Amino acid sequence: MKRSDAPAPLLIKNADLYDPAPQGITSLLILGGRIAQICPDLDERSIRSVLPDLVVMDVSGARTLPGLIDGHNHFAGAGGEGGFQFRTPPAQLTDFTRSGITTAVGLLGTDGYNRSLEDLLAKSRALDAEGLSTWIFTGSYQLPGPNLCGSTARDICLIDKVIGCKIALSDHRSSHPSAEALRSLVSSVRVSAMLAGKRGVVCVHMGSEETGLEPLREALRGTDVPKTQFLPTHVGRCEDLTRDAVRWVREGGAADITASDEAASRFGQFVVAGADVSRVTLTSDGNGSMPVFNEEKELVGMGVGSPSSILKTIGDIVTGGVADLTTAVSLATKNPAALLGLPGKGSLKPGFDADCLVLNDDWTVRSVVARGVPAVWDGKILVRGTYER
Image 1 (cartoon, rainbow, N blue to C red):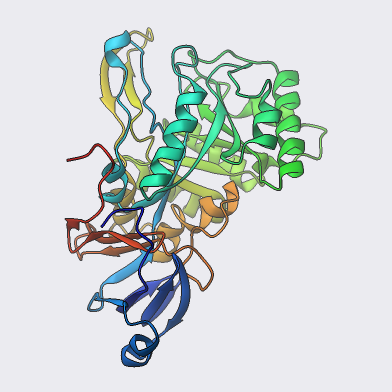
Image 2 (image 1 turned 135 degrees about the vertical axis):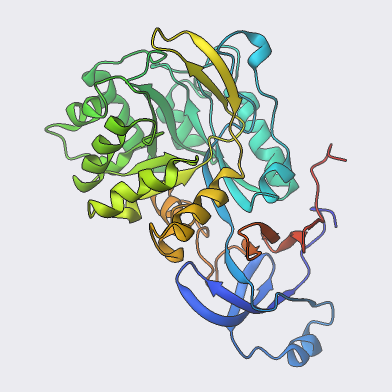
């Protein structure tokens, strides 16, 4: 099936549905790429009499979730610490769909000099054409950072795909902006987003410097700007930062955890502390370089973020008894959709985009439907990117 084909009517039967709250065994009727009806007793024969080209897929009681949202992905390529040979290549469509991801937010990283927002925006539109749903952040680690329309505010206000901006704090690679500069940035993001009918989020790459989240608190002190206008990410990087992030969320803020082997236990600290975990998200940092620095901040190793880490971490949270399935799945569905302001995403409800993830019992991907089109079914890839074999 080519993504350019109009999506055929689709009936998913016998799904153990989590929307992400549990709904029991039911069926979903998908029309025009959106969920038209959810009901346990949808009659296939009656539907087919009206829609003769109906495609029927019986998932035999498998857990069916909203497609995952990766709110932090370097899908146009990233990296560069250590030299140009460490630049990561652009992502492909199946990097996402094989990992259960149907929505992604792209951004630049350390390299705001050789990487361009123009290329990021073009890659976003390419992935959309291939079947994914994407948005982007303007900016990069540096402040002031790059933009497309003359300023961060104009990018957010004038470009549909731009939902916020990216900066870095408390990191030896950041530009260490003043509280005044941060206050000015978040204020301009808030106003421009209001004018465009967007949430407007400042995605804050957090390093391990001892200042932690204090620069954000100082920037907002004395203002009426909500703490959720900032979304600090990588907050599971170290124990001190995680504790500070738990405190930040309890103060009314939001935080993002990068999926990893330690992420489930890091998230558990929010749960134990009684923080409002609806304001916590889980992302992959996919396709981004993962530099390893020693105590002198010298590069001693390099890895690459994987989109598959989100689903693995969700499984770790549930099987490890940290939280129930609804809470864990919400970290990469309902929560980011609300915090980032992504319309029609994050839930399986009538009127929402038909982004569905069907799981095997071992937490691997069985099937994926993206905007009403089966992209993966019973482990077989049905839709590939333009240049994928």
